[in-house]
Image (cartoon, rainbow, N blue to C red):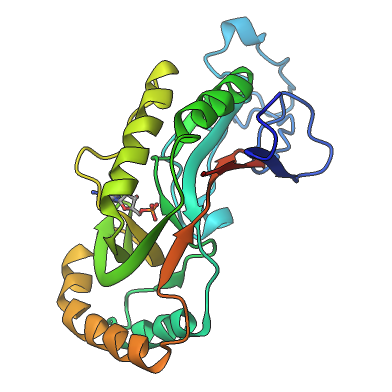
Length: 264
Ligand code: AMP
């Protein structure tokens, strides 16, 4: 179906997922008794779904299940949270940087390490299940003409999500910006075919390495000079580590599936 060697379905995890399975936590919706005390002993019949304003797909988010993070989109059957990125394998220099940052930020900020390092090239968008195959083919078409290229990490920078519910410390990409921008323009074409939002108009390509809840931009920005001087020192000490990426493919994460889009 896809050009040989140019795209591969890496992994499908998550057990017995049927075609319309929703990625993410399963919720057991147990029938409960109405707690209305005026009818203590009567069990009410459930309201037929067509008369209820509760949809069977409604999902009550429990932020405790995912470290207090709040969903930015409704959890709905057949909707697959998806994004395209450049993956990165953490090295010793980066691990030491993370340890150092935790000692610099104020104690009341609970900083957590990001657990999959990557450079985002799209926002997290919601793909309908039936769109996955054509979307992947469209991305492959738009991406296949790009040559492999190099990106280099620069300074640390603070980012906040659009909902202002999480703040991130990231390392900005200092070279390779033009190639990234052209790729993003092409990915935006694919996204627009499915009426999905484009990437940021003024992208700041970066790799998030740590995050905390809430809008903590002001406090974290105050720490940036110290964070950046540590980063400079670590780049010198760990100069064998890769503070750059030779980009050979993009990774599409679509629900519980991963796709590689290889460059020329
Ligand atoms: P990411 O690690 O790619 O998820 O990015 C962390 C956060 O940076 C996201 O929640 C974005 O909303 C936020 N962000 C804020 N401004 C920008 C920008 N100009 N370019 C890219 N990401 C941004």
